[in-house]
Amino acid sequence: MDSEFFRRTVLPNGIRVLTSAMPTARSASVSLYIGTGSRYERDEEAGLSHFQELLVGKGSSKRPSAKD
Image 1 (cartoon, rainbow, N blue to C red):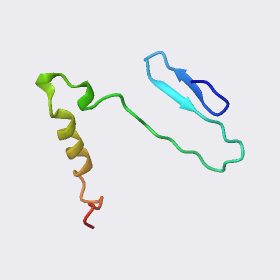
Image 2 (cartoon, rainbow, N blue to C red):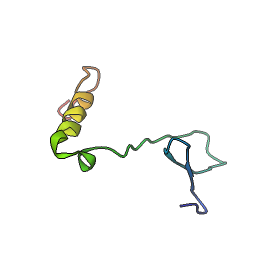
Image 3 (tube, rainbow, N blue to C red):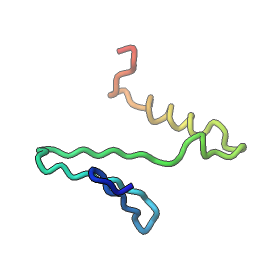
């Protein structure tokens, strides 16, 4: 995936990292994407990813819901 704008690096533990240099930027941004979820669940695990999503996404009174 190396190109003019992005560089792809694979760490020893298998984590893939994409970086892009922006010399004129005065800030930085980080995004994290994890190769997991219902796509990777076995039949006996069906629904666990969605359940975890609900626990994390709705588990805090400090974060407003879509209705707020």
